Image 1 (cartoon, helix red, strand yellow):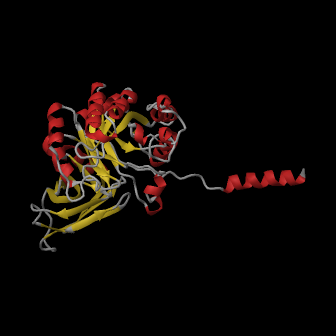
Image 2 (tube, rainbow, N blue to C red):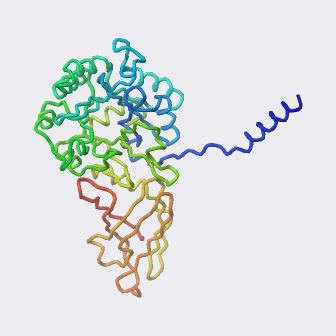
Image 3 (tube, rainbow, N blue to C red):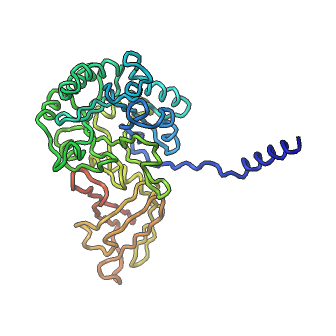
Length: 389
């Protein structure tokens, strides 16, 4: 009995001494008029070729502070693990199970689960597509399987059209994937045709496995497609993202009117998304400029006879790197600077002659934002206006 009490006391002591779990939360601020929801729109579970249970995917999102998750397991039978390993027969596999398990687990967490799947043709074109906001993945998978493994392009086309008949939001995944674009990224006639037919709504410009695709980004801008990012993760997230080193998973930033699935879909249809990955932001200027200004808080401005001190706080997980741009030639200031996440930075500003007094009523400091892109290779211009009255 004494030994049992000692063991119980020791376990209780360890529980008290054990550190509480610290969330690795990604912080991205809202912009005027919209909530900024962080989403992973491409991920896999054990119900296709992944190794993670759907409820764990939800827990990962909670730990990282994500708002939206779309589980996009491969919908064709050849990649359904529970079919291939004999756990279930083909007739018993329900391709909606991963979504249903995740949605049930997410009810108490606040994470919004989008019903989706991945349509997989290894042959280009058409390649891989995600169908988001599906209602039933079974007929989509059956359409893919009906064509047979020797006619994947037709199977994928049939599956895409079946998903679209459900009102799905269709995205072209990783156009730059090395297995399908070994030498260069190609925009095929078939994808142009899908755009014209309204069968293609978005394109994945960043995929964790392949990184950023400037070709896909420019094509999205040119064709008016929604920018999408996903991890495409098949393993537990900690095996893909080095959280101990401060890494963050790539996310789609969805600028929604409210926190709901309906509002997320409306934002996707209206192209109100951006991508945050590897410390960079990609999106339309009218969205990422207010995002930048929501990240940077001017906390204090001190003006002396010859010097301006502008103290800025970066209240986000997004680093901001600025380069002095044309239009600021009358000012002497740091030409290149980075304001790291949750860091205070003081910009010192003088006249070209450092001893000349500052008598202006305002100062306009022009920058280009090195890590915010409105198109492939096109950096966001930004003017920091300082009222000195």
